[in-house]
Length: 287
Image 1: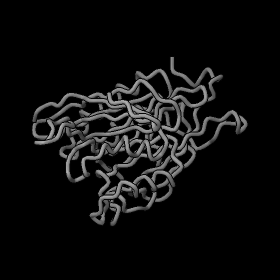
Image 2: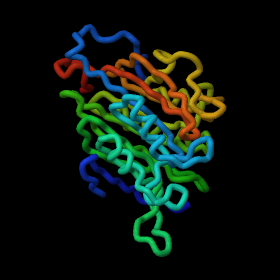
Image 3: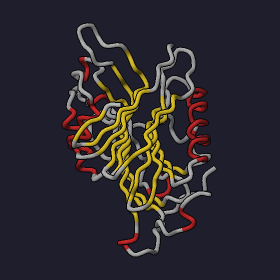
Image 4: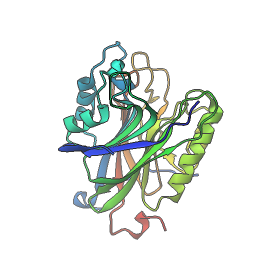
């Protein structure tokens, strides 16, 4: 398969500009509420806004995200002028405008326009944030023959004086070895980040898989710490597996996690609440 070039688009709601971990604990910091940096993060594979009922409805996706109260959102399977299946909409820009957030879009597939159209057909991931966000990047992940190109999107989110590195990814569903190769990249990136890290995404493997041990080698899975029940996110109309994750570095304290029931996509969103280190904390940033 052709290795497609990475493409990034960034914008804000007011105007679109194209362009092994230490175990987490559920114990919150003893700082007063005003000093805490609490962030609600949502990971959601939106399946280009086509629900389990076969209905294409981007507004329904927006309503789910709005109701979640998310501050930071990692989306997977996001179309940008991709085709008739999503009515050629720039979905990341539309959702950012609708939710009043800034966004970074990362195209892992970047195809020539259809006949009679001028926009490139793109498919990938997006990070949305209610907080200021910059340094958007996309790293194309290792690609095995016959598999679809995947990427690791990142952005730095500024939360009241604290920088948070957010990664968002969608690993291959086609082979375990492909996921292992791709997870090695996000581990290396996360380990070298000089700030607290949250990684969200559709990792396409359950916790009992061989890959899980690699997923959690550098970052910690929040669900076993603060989630309740099996945490199944897929399929949304008949949940049978937990394949969507939020992983955090040791500086980030998870305090709650839940799966939001909805059939707006074939996946259900994973909502995680975390507390970041206070900016005056010398232990909150890696050396």
